Amino acid sequence: MIKLDKLRDLDIDASHSRRSYVSAASGLVCLDAGLCVIADDDLHLGVFPVDNSGPGHLVRLFEGVLPASSAGRKSKKPDLEALTVIPPCAGFSFGALLAIGSGSRPNRKRGALLGLDRSGALAVPPKSVDLSFLFDPIEGEFAQLNIEGAVVTRGELRLFQRANRRQNDSAIIRYSLASVLDALEKDQSERVVPIAIQHVDLGAVRGVPLGFTDAASLPNGNMIFSAVAESTDDAYLDGPCLGAGIGIIGDGGNLLSFDFLAIPHKIEGIHASQRGDLLDLLLVTDADNADVPAGLFSGRIRR
Image 1 (cartoon, rainbow, N blue to C red):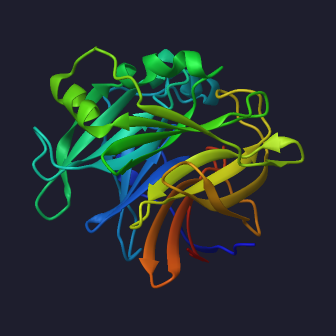
Image 2 (cartoon, one colour):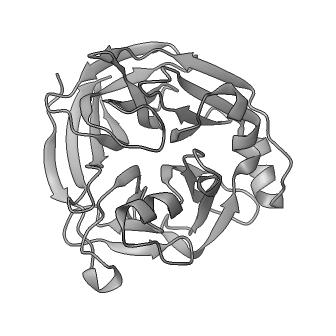
């Protein structure tokens, strides 16, 4: 089993938020300029010091204000669940962060692009993007879309579909990266059809399927992912986390390894850096409770 160590709560400068922390971390990308975290119940990106020396700050992704009530917020939020870096392209000379909604509702089919500068720091303001061109072609493939991770690797954008108790159908949806970048540049509504959909069986905990919650690319072309068994029947409602783990999947979609966490934290964001035959991990959590700060954890596995 994998033991994780808690590094910090994801606290932020309270002068820029209705609360002093990020509570529902759902994606993680580590840049030289900071740890970038999206939350599935917010309109902002959180940016935290790499050395954990102080609170983070928020970068607004979308205009507006979400309802204060839990139910109202859930119905209106963009449900950002995946965060990845796209390479230099038209309009983004040094690449960009791409934040992606889950696609589980019409208002959750949007995303945001945040350009990077020469040093790898964020260059604001962000650009809101309609991602229906990615989601619409695959809606018929699944009972309910619930995209939880995104990886750019080997000339592709790969989205990770999460299983639930009713729909045991985790999958990796592969798109031509060139086609996706072209669509983002043109703000086009023409659909981008995936080049492949790979279905992956991650197993189950007490009858509840494990489902992807995030993923990241590794130098050798494999992908590391986090997964949880959440006892819920759909992509909208939350449920108790019965188990969680970290695995590695091959370029062809074959499951290479999977190990459970000693404590089933609901991991929703993962980053890995390679050191010899070890992978040093950073992970962020979502407690599904607005009163509980998200946590940043570290861990280590053999690749």
